[in-house]
Image 1 (cartoon, rainbow, N blue to C red):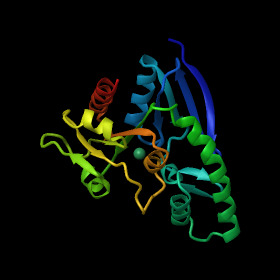
Image 2: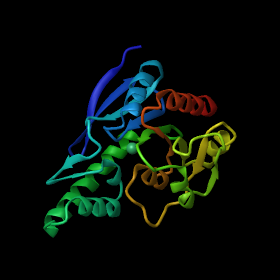
Image 3: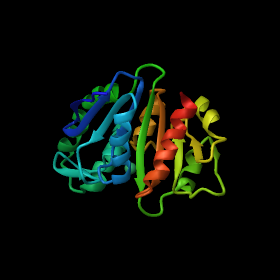
Image 4: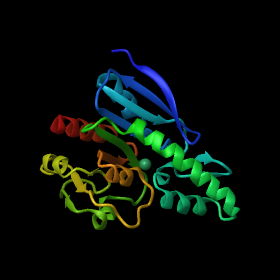
Length: 224
Ligand SMILES: [Zn+2]
């Protein structure tokens, strides 16, 4: 199968697009330092139909205007404002406001590209390095299913209750988040909830490629 390669930018943050035939399944890698997820997304798109969006960065933080920032905090105005202030304390107010306006304009175009057509699925792949685990997500979740024999750092977040029902009895930790949180932190999952896009985040420990591959295959098998 031939893969078509193109590029898209979110307010100057570049993403490579790899498209393997047309399909309503999209994939995204948003943190450039999550090498296991990066290997998996590149491997997966060669063998499966869909469109993969892969951030063109080796680092977690990317350059935006006069600062660096976590790209997964830029998907709402309030989240972006907070993140930009966290990464740079001494903003000139007009400069920050201008950047937020540019982000807002670019965000709509970018989300239109990465969100699949009606009913499609967006799968994000992430890796964690230290303490972050499924227990950190329980308070923000409507439903969850935690498995005794699974490492809490390997888990699935989904935003569709129908998908959750199909996945909850599998072997993996899973949470449902389908209600907008007041403390929207600007991560992609909240934008997906807001736009009612079926979104799945598959999160594993960095280096656990076979585990993440198994989880991705499980999700696709159950949801297709
Ligand atoms: Zn990540």
